[in-house]
Length: 277
Ligand code: URA
Image (cartoon, rainbow, N blue to C red; front, side, top):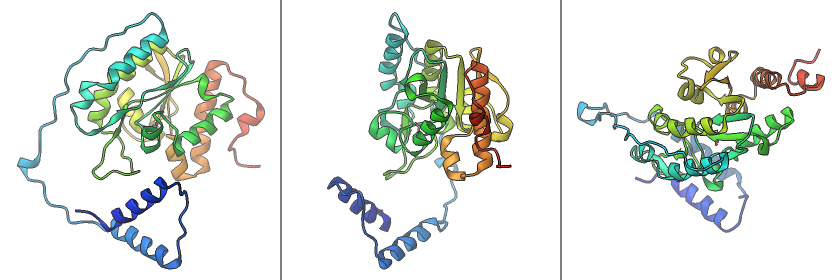
């Protein structure tokens, strides 16, 4: 059943396909959109789920990865090839078709791990290129690093799907994370970074089996295959919250990373996001 908002989305997509990046909204159109937004937020009647509708979790097919190649780039390329048709992920039937693999330096000292690609990442075939990616670029810049120096990956290599999906994204489920985890572990094994940064609670849960709030997960060094790992806020949470406390907390995590790696830290960098005296 198509929703009123689908017609709006279709119209905007067609305008975009014709090269338009802006549409003019008069007061009436603005009121109409506001009404659609309010309607979409109203709770819908939820039908109770009957026993017969509850299906058993799908068994994850057991597949082994083969590490081919003589050096890191060749080994990563072989994992990428196998990831494209990774049966444990495909068998779930809940992820989209396009695989978005990692980018960055196979010899990186720092590996950033997010949760899953979204609309922008799928379109550009690269992790962290949408608004969260822009925020991550800002964080890297403040650290004095470039994207070319780090390794950037996602736990789940396919965008989680939603019925009638347009630009909207959803978080990957624990099942989807578990299905893709061997790929991530292989990347960690090959790159062997000095430090891993898990971005957000979902990545922390999937990688380190941590539960609870971000406040509890942060502030400790964890280990993945013996590699020191820190958990911090996801850049998209930074965007959503806009809070200076969250910015400072994330920045303190990055200062800990820089200290552990022996990277130079200026007084100006130490003072970022501190309340002005
Ligand atoms: N969020 C993620 O976790 N990964 C991306 O690549 C983009 C947004």
